[in-house]
Amino acid sequence: MKDYIYTLRMETRDYECDIQGIVNNANYLHYLEATRHKWLQDEGFSFREWHEEGLDVVVSEIDIKYKTPLRGQEAFLSCLNVSRQGARFVFEQDVYREADGALCVSALVSTVCIRDGRLDRGDTIAELFSKYLNPNAE
Image (cartoon, rainbow, N blue to C red; front, side, top):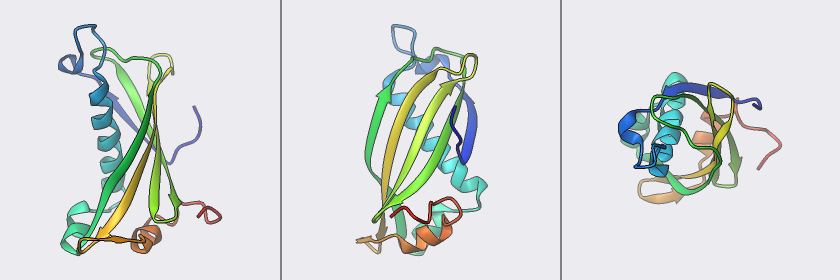
C-alpha cells in the first residue's frame, strides 16, 4: 500500500453481493463516498454548513477500475488522497482487502464547487484543504 492521508476500515455486508457471491460493482461507489464524507467529518468540515453558505461540492466524474472482488463479510480498507487540478479537486481512492492487502478498486473521483448555483473556482475549499494539497500541483 502507498501512503494516504486517510484510511477507513469497513466491512462488506451480505446483501451487497450479487448472485455470484461478490460485492456488486455499484456498492464500491457507496464505499468511496462514505470514505470521503467520513474524512471530511473527521477533519471538522461540514457539507451542511457549506451548503447553507451557498457552496456545494459535487462529483463531476468517476473513473473506477475493478481489480479484485470483495465478498460478503470481508473487512477492507478504503483509502484516499486529494489533489487540486484547476477548479477540480480529485480524490485518488483505493480499496484494499484487509486479509491479504489485495487491491480491489482504484478510482479517481473528480469534484467541483458550485457557489450559489454557478461553477466556482474552489478557492475556499482549496484553503480548507491546504494542508493536504501539494503546493506545486495546480
